[in-house]
Length: 318
Ligand code: PMP
Image 1: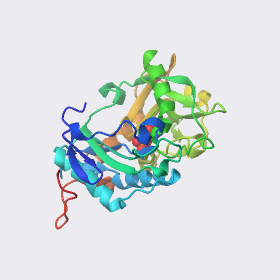
Image 2 (image 1 turned 90 degrees about the vertical axis):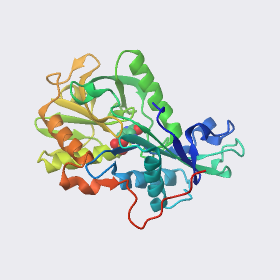
Image 3 (image 1 turned 180 degrees about the vertical axis):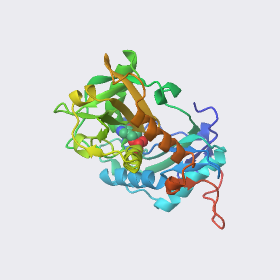
Image 4 (image 1 turned 60 degrees about the horizontal axis):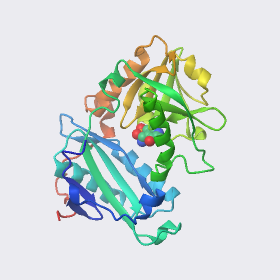
């Protein structure tokens, strides 16, 4: 996975991948004290472009604010760093992972006594669940792990430590032969999958939940809602129950890594016809036209990676 990644940006410098290390006493390693993003860059006719970069950078700063983390760079600077990491590695089709985390100074729980570190990694990536996920679909299970709620942790923040909940659910699902897991909240309502938001299609209507059900407000979720509405499908945002999932005609999951993945079965229940449904297919088609720059209507979702004329590239190579 990381074989072709040569350069990582760390605290203001571009460093070779193998030298991008942190000390074992780092606060984030022990307590998960950090926030991060997962972003994608796609090849387009005008060169590589990052999909919805501004939305991801905004979410990173919001996640940081939820943990009182002060990122020592402006959004514009970090945006340029992200583009520089892609350029420096020579990638077109890649996943980008900015992370802001507490480093080494002490291991008490008041994290902000540690230095804040910032890094941006990137590596080539195509599909998450394999190309099948986009067509024939994946099998998910309802997890026995309950999703934490917003009184326990800021659920709309993408924070390192919060992911142990998803890790438990994902490992359980894969060990039982499923591709992913769907987590319920404490009241039994549907929340989301381990790294994806969930959508149902029922009688021509698109349904999904929101932050009231402990979900990360996905950028792909927002894109899918916009596309569905642009295509003329009514979208209803409401609480979802397991019974809604079982009676849905179509189910799909959205995420930067998973893109728009078809769900063909939930536990031993076959969803709808057991194949990709027509509304999922229509939304997927527009989504992929958007990310690959084939649909001018969504060009404002793409941030070109090329150096803008007259703009200085960010910090020097070590
Ligand atoms: N939920 C969780 C828990 C996630 O980790 C992700 C991936 N970032 C998503 C939903 C989907 O968010 P996005 O579409 O912004 O990638």
